[in-house]
Image (cartoon, one colour):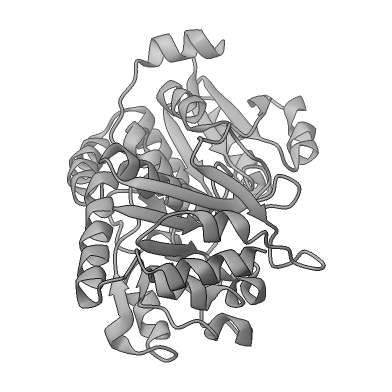
Length: 371
């Protein structure tokens, strides 16, 4: 199957993580993938984390650019049976709408929803999608107020495939101490969200030899002020690619995620990205972790945070219960399983209407649009 996908790619954003997890699985399965993504001068996220594959074309700006820009040539010249958008609100919607009728003539169209509520921007509703995909029933419940239910499909967010590592070797490779419990803070909000934990971690550090490892490129000055205390903090100013991120996860004893619930519907792309490492995630209970009971260890206050962290460091009963829950969750929500669910959807869409890809009139119109 030939698939075209308009999305963030190789960036530190939730839409990019989702696109890469399923997109690379499609490539591994033998499907042909063409990715259309943001320009390196204007993209969604804070960093481009690695080099693009040869099937990636960077040809548009974010919707916030003034004015938004879309080079239509890569999209209209590419060959695909299925055309997908991820996180439509971040894309140059009005520019895409001008060529959408040409795309519809050539392929079945799918949009994957990352919004946390029905958008207020009218531009979002100008597309006649063949299918609209969301991650769980919370998304479905608000989407059905704006779209026909027969077009809505629930396909869960995918997990990174299981990949265990050797803690000693990874610490040696990353030049990290072997005689500390390492607590990892990672991502765009690694500092901002976790400042509230520092006093509690300071107290714990008087009983346990812990090192707080911060891997981020934002707000680092805020945490440098805390390095004068007893708590040991190591800052790595990076936006790591997935290989280096998994090295950090394998080297760590726990990943901390202290992010309060936002308004609307959300999932934690960080959790799904990191679960395959088998590094425990200890998180503030929030709507980021809907349907993830037992897979992510949660707390509601700082006292529970301290109790659960010590339980993890001591490898107590809750730690082993978490391992069993995680194994089942990864099997159900593996990138391979989720990628196959998308392929099943695509095949059902193609069976409803045969796209005449050899129709010379369709390609004549595409060439005229390019010129």
